Image 1 (cartoon, rainbow, N blue to C red):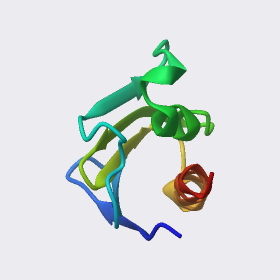
Image 2: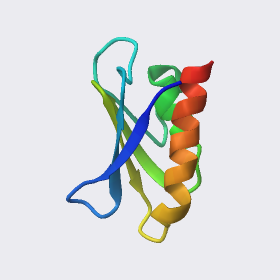
Image 3: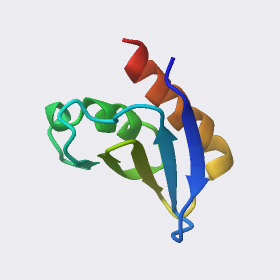
Image 4: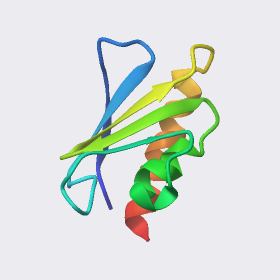
Length: 90
């Protein structure tokens, strides 16, 4: 099972989720936002499907998630962690 550790960033609308493994198969950064082809980043697409998420950036050993201003991190963090864990469980 992947270990996911959420952490703060200077942006209050973004959280960095550090992983114990690479977040992308290619090792290259991947950005997922509205209109991005799901095949560009399967993990990004999965996290982006969560209501309130506006941007997902996957790189090296972390995933940075940006939320809408009115979305609550208290609700989003467990959903993002579950989405990341689900991605790596497949």
